[in-house]
Image (tube, rainbow, N blue to C red; front, side, top):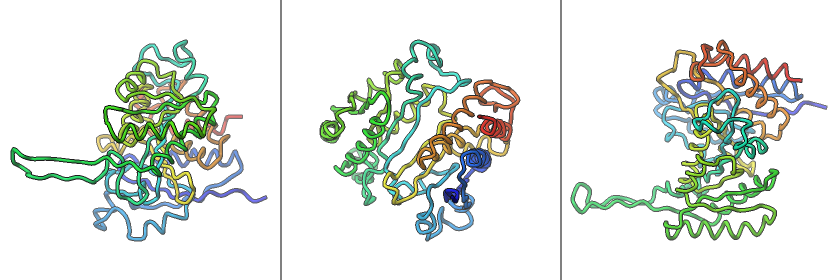
Length: 366
């Protein structure tokens, strides 16, 4: 029987993306060797500011045709995230972020530590997920609260008026809710939390209506609904009570950063921009950005890149391989060897040192 081969477009991008990408690839190679599949990595230099300087654009004209055949896109970082249109063009309407306590990484919530009584629910669930609506409209007309519909009149005068419209469509709301309900349905706790704000008197009641309608299709999933203000407070005060949290583009944007910040992992957090249909490739990237302040020092933490690869494995259906990577991350960060971990975690290691330690832990796991 021939090996399964996954075709992956590798785009390192800008700044520390170029430094952490090799560490992500080495860990993916290690886990593939253990689990009997292989990678076809193809590297591209576009979607970077260097490419823009040379060509006057972030992407070649045929980039959609070039990237469409791949199983996924593994992305490093970009200096100007507004310049690349992967999410809309590839209809990656799910932005998925894990919220997880990591051994060796201190949470800013002093009483919330792995294994403590107040975190039992989170330990049992291993993590919780924030599902953010990512594009809203497949026709590129809008993006929820980030719609480009609006304008300014009487600019520079006392009569100046500025408007920006929130656009929600039934197809956009329903499909992100379907994804979140199915994710909740697949987990032991079967709990979905919806972010809303009924003071926003038209769009958010509509969101609420669609949540109620979809809940009837998933009777085994318990549904909770919170206004965004109290929900952010609950993220801090009782993060262990959540399992799958779903929100519109704006609310999901807020929560997907707050969740990892609560666990102390915002600097190493991964993300997935996912097209669940499989008609287009999904994209997996760390959230830390290009970090020009440390670029070139070779001290960037590669865990976000490696963890993004773990999410890519889950998306591709390689669950055991994904678990091996997660276990290796936990093992290496948990032992807090100063020669291995990078300065952001209190160590003296370089990017390569931490990547090599995680790769070794993958290969040594029985």
